[in-house]
Amino acid sequence: MNTPGASMPGVSSAAGSQTPRFGILGSGKGSNFRALAETFQQGLLGSEPVIVLSDVETAGILDLAKGLGIPSHFVAPGPFRTKMTPEAEGEIVRLLEEAKVEFIVLAGFMRVIKEPLLKAFPGRILNIHPSLLPEFRGLKAWRQAMEAGVPEAGCTVHLVDEGVDTGKILGQSRVPVLPDDTPETLHARIQIAEHELYPRIVRGFAQNLLGENPKPHTHEPHHHREATP
Ligand code: GRF
Image (cartoon, rainbow, N blue to C red; front, top):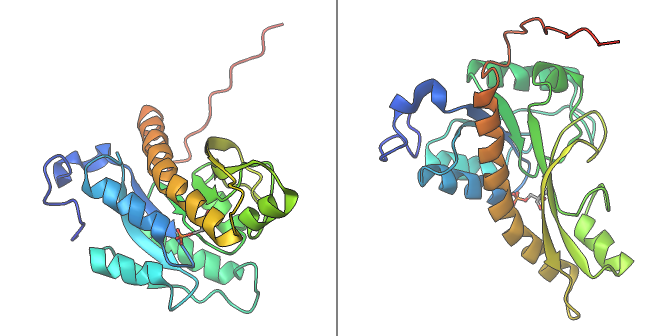
């Protein structure tokens, strides 16, 4: 496959199974995906973006992927505004499994993730949210922060569970709210922090995966240790 780092020293296919593969889901311009891809190209991501999927046919993230030679697909989400149909999620699962990804990175994906994806990749879906969670869950979190008058905002990378922005926190970056900020200038400052935070957390997550069982779909039985009395 034609991946951006494939011809670069240290990012050869010889890395093979030592480099966990991941898929990206995004609905927007894809600046976080760009930061991840650039870190991969520098040989510093410890994992490889291999497929980009979007619920928005015209999303910039799909064009970015094409420019980088990473396979990309639009998946029609169905009639709901905030979630996909089970069939659409099933198609996303199929594409991700076909691409042999071990984890998923949400980068500006604007729909709630439901059971088909959560079940197929348990504990293996990451998201970045533009607030210091647990504060300001949901949409336009930077605007919520400004309206609340907090002195500090930021961004959070977390695991995705069945809630909205509720999963286990993997890392955060803080940014100041300045006196003359508008929602737009604050969001821009948060995004700069996101582009540093997300690659760093993805690298750590991939390293942890290699320390565990790198195959998500083997469903090996867990060996429960008996509780000691
Ligand atoms: C980011 O602000 C992220 O925190 C939120 O959606 C936005 C995506 O931006 N989840 P981009 O498409 O990566 O530029």
